[in-house]
Every structure is written in C-alpha cells, then in structure tokens.
Amino acid sequence: MKKLFLLAIGVMFYSVASAQNETDSIANGNQEVKINLAMSVVGIPEISYEYFLEDNTSVGLSIGAALDTPEDLSLRFIGTAYYRLFFGKKPNAGFFIEGNAAVVHYRDIYDEYYYTYYEDGDYSYIRYEVDDESTNFGLGAAVGFKLMTRNNYVGEIYAGAGRLFGDSHDIEVFPRVGVSIGKRF
View 1 (cartoon, rainbow, N blue to C red):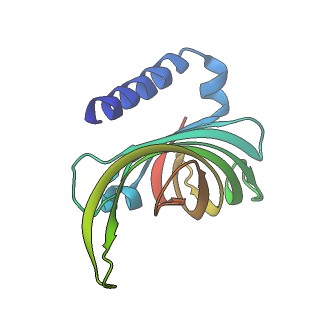
View 2 (view 1 turned 180 degrees about the vertical axis):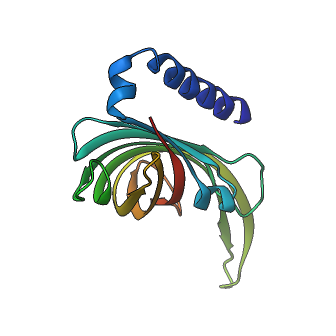
C-alpha cells in the first residue's frame, strides 16, 4: 500500500511539473496542490490536486493511504474525484459545494457466531473473528470554505460523507473531511 501511495504522489508531482511548461496554466493560476492536515492527524495522509475549469467551478483528485497498520483503523486507502461549485467573490474561493465519487479500500473486522442446538433445548456456539478486506465504490457530497492569500497560498476546510455501494458488513459510509493547506499556481 505504501508503494501505491508513493507512486500516486510521484505521478501527481510529475503532472504538476510537466504542466509548468504550459504558460497559460501558470499565468491564469488555475491549478492547486494541497495536503489535508486533518486526515494526516488521523493516520491517513491525503494529497489533492485541483484544476479550475472556470471562475466558479473546479475538478480535483485526492489520494490518501494509511501508512501504518493500527488495529482500530479500518480505512486503508481512499481515492476521491470531485467537482466543486464556488460562491465567493474571488475566483475559485469562498463557500463551495462538492459532489464526489470515491474508491475506498478498508479492513472490516467482525464476529460470526455458529450455533449448535441440542435435543434437550440447550445450545452451544462458536465465535469466529473474521478479518475481511474489501474495495468499494461510493458517491458523496461535502460543503466547505476556501481562503486564498495574495501570494496564492490557499487554506480550506470542508466536511461531508458518502455512501458506499457493494458488499460490506459494518462500513457503509466514507468520510470527506479536511483542513487543507496548499499553493495555487
């Protein structure tokens, strides 16, 4: 999982570096790279790339992966593509709403019980702990606010959630929360 996360970071930085050759992208300042501090504190560092389509709309991609394997952390990887609509006075800043789609890989630990019933009315059971890993697709929404400084540093805060589709025993939602900082170029 670490190799996949590092590969995704490398591809993201390569695309940013190759995009610097396009003078229109730099002159317009229509790209951002950010790191999500809130998810990093939880143990799933997340990096985002955002591209602005117009003065009030953008598309982006966020990739986060758990770097260690704590027993109580079920979310292992999340890749989220999103579309944002901004309502601020500055271009692509201020209040926004977001629609997103995510691919989520998680570790699901749950108990299964097998009962044996006897003729005298008594019973016994065996408990099995099941450690299952699954990857599912989901759709969600979020709301947030983005601030921008004069020298193109950005900060944003957002919150939302999404619904996962597919087989799962306990986990049916994915989080979309963040306190991010980054740079617009």
